[in-house]
Image 1: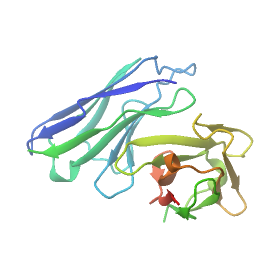
Image 2: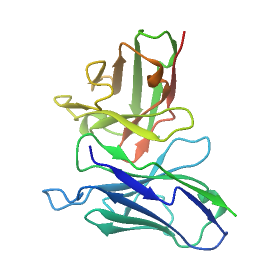
Image 3: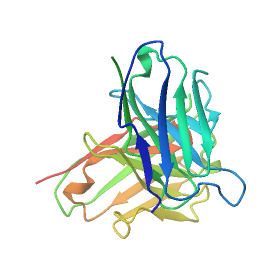
Image 4: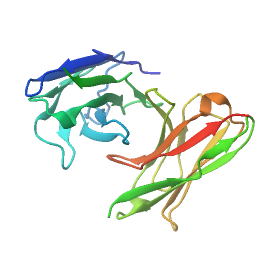
Length: 112
Length: 112
């Protein structure tokens, strides 16, 4: 199985400051169709997960533009340009290039 | 409204069976592959199973292969997960998902 490794696992941030989460896979997520299948999910406390980003850098509908995804191959980053209180929660990366799909361990974002 | 609504969770004894359902609304269900993802209490996300739009192809995590069966009825806009030989390790909230859309989840508790 493809192993997804996130860092850090805990991220205390100051409101209005940027935040960055890294996700690395042990195999390239570049698929034969030329797309790279890496998603980012947000799970707020007590809520279902919500997809933020698909195929590395495409924001889902309704996702604020302070969220951005970047990377290629096996090294990816989720950035929040200015953290707001509603961004508290756990963030997961997930690869969609191989079966079985696999998630990272999750990064807990909290306000300092 | 576009939504997924899971049901069928509950308390079941070890070795028992349960069938989860997920009713889709607000979109053309038969056009989309569907997925089940679970989350054990206090833990991260684990991909469980997926099925193509027609139901002709299915995939499973190794941990559930041979015990769980995913299926769908496109005439009823419904996704299913038949779970047999349940063990304590299957205790989790089970979410159905379609790309960026997730349901609210249904809790399965395996305990005597």
